[in-house]
Length: 284
Image (cartoon, helix red, strand yellow):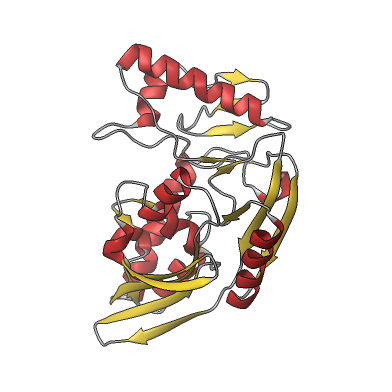
């Protein structure tokens, strides 16, 4: 799985698949159920840590990438497949004069992953855009209004369901996003500004982005920095010296390196500040 995660860490999956249609997704889920293989759906692998021991089941990525705009005048509904790049479609919409996704400039990963985990930054998130989502539960399709997603900070009903239940997990297929008409020049300028800020904060090297959620009213990165942990290493995993909420793979880092460093950060922050840092990254 080193080839399929932005951290470039992870042992082998017994089976790995990339599919491009609902029909193939349904067939794959039916096959996994029939042969008794555990199935995990993933997005772009940008918020994922796969253990070095690998995974004895099937890891599958849904890669459908079509989209369409329903122009309503001063607003629009963007219907977009889960496999579409989040940052890529945000740039495309801005160039067309549709606002609402500027915050997603430079955010790695897919629409599906963003909907699943309520991705957000720079004052925006998926909860503020989503109108409805089509998902596959088992082999059946369902349409959920945004209210059913029960969004909270970096979480959703789907994410909580996957964390606490077994069986075939739901798959996000299509999202309907609410956009507003705006000046494309102003939108592109705003996204250029965000891109510059993001580049200044983002460390070099392979990472998953932010490792920890921000506690209410606080910054995980600032607490980790104040705890003196910037540059701390375990094996070839390092707390970034540019942004302390990033853990960087310096080359050949293992999942044990990362998990040990995560535990060290959590214990140090708990001891110094009395705060329990919660993981944002998903561990398989």
